[in-house]
Amino acid sequence: PGRAFHPIVLENGSRPDEAGLLEAGLPGSATLLASDANLGFAAGVNAAAAYGSADWILLLNPDLVPGEGVLGSLLSRLPAAPAHGILGAVRLGDGPRSYGEFPGLLDRFRAPSRVSSTGAPQQVDWVSGCFMAIRRSLFASLGGFDEGFFMQLEDVDLCWRALGAGFVTLVDPRLTFEHPGHLSYVRSGRDLGRDYHHARTRLLTRHRGRVVGWAYRILSGLSAMARTPRRGP
Image (cartoon, one colour):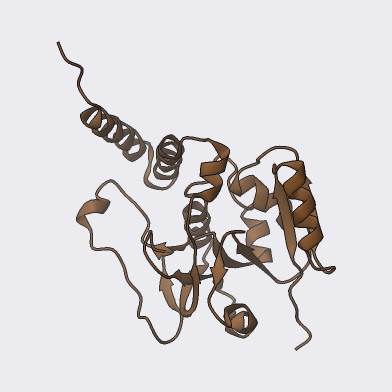
């Protein structure tokens, strides 16, 4: 009771005509921030999170479609336990899952985690930043997202650091969404694969150690070489 959403929208380097359409379509309660350049996901969220004062910050990608009634029920589903710091949702349809286990070198040989499709929230290692609720106090204490990640794995890093600070990440199977994914990459012209390998190297080096990060760089480089077509004699 008495709680409501305060939408904060970051116009992250869009064309002037698109920015005008965005501003015209926003409700009067929304705050619109503008950036001349594409800051990337991590830096963009950090900039937007500096505004507002609510106890929780909800991150939503602009191309995400929440399930029916999800946003209306979200406030009642936010965890009360102080140690529950992050809450995520389940992505529907094809494509990568919106939660999982912390990665390592041998991910292909591990059975991926799955949550029950019904019931109460369940603890996981990480949830996707495209639909993530996080306590503002926790987000601030962690220094927000690491802006060294442009638009890949910054959410996994944040959940990993939250766990190190004593906070649990949950996924609620009653909260669902659809998300086509990577539309921002298509428009930015950036190399998705290169950004991913840079981000994963950074992630593994920080949380698994330099040796694991170095080994990943070697293995990913060898894998890329193996996939490169050979030229004729």
